[in-house]
Picture 1 (spheres, one colour):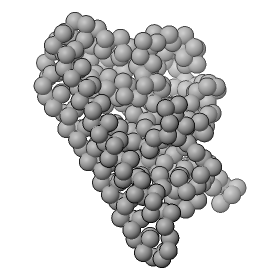
Picture 2 (tube, helix red, strand yellow):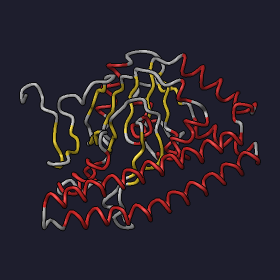
Picture 3 (spheres, rainbow, N blue to C red):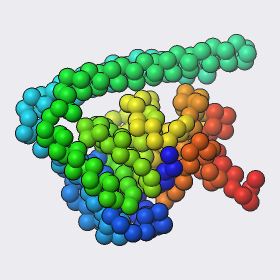
Picture 4 (spheres, rainbow, N blue to C red):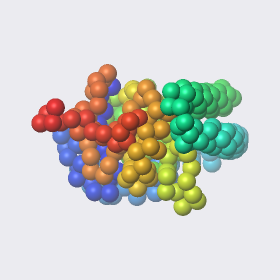
Length: 309
């Protein structure tokens, strides 16, 4: 599916221009549920969208469902606890696996031997990542099978309302915020079947639409953590993992660190989304000229533009 990804919208010129070009008229179905309790504080976003914002209000709807249905709310709390514990245990295992990888990179007595051992250690990390994603998917599937959202009248009423709003829209916009919350409410309201171009997304919105959601922050206040797989995304575009806020969240001057990330997440490309950037992705096409991504050998590299090729 064709999709336009933007860098974080500290400056909104890119979003304003992309929306004006791709959706020149008509209402714009907008998802900003990642803002959580600030979802309704959308005056600035509406102005960026030319006063045509049609807020799907997924956060507000989700809160109403839980307030009206204690059984469902209890199931949501249990799921939250289970997923938090799964993420914590995965992080412990990941820490040890990544420590092994980094130790091997520092020992290079016989390069051919070291490279073979390092490649196997990276594969072990990839296997752990895959196992975690599968476990999380199974936990979520058990939750949805138990709560039977498709059989709850209030859920069906909200879904019908959202369906109508999306059907009447000229396109869709996904903003940022808390990616875990955003991803979850998209599933609750079954938005995956409604997503269609023209489609613009940034920050957590871009992450949620990828095949996989990666949490990363080399400069977190609580200390550095290894990048973690969080969940499967909606797979709107393939073979690309977006990394918004890269300048603030990644050690971009550490080519070795970035190279390990590129190897770990291969064959997918780690796409950097800097402030103000616009990347137009087209079905089954490689990254467009000017896109910056992580290379196993060179840290950050850029797809050559027409004048550079």
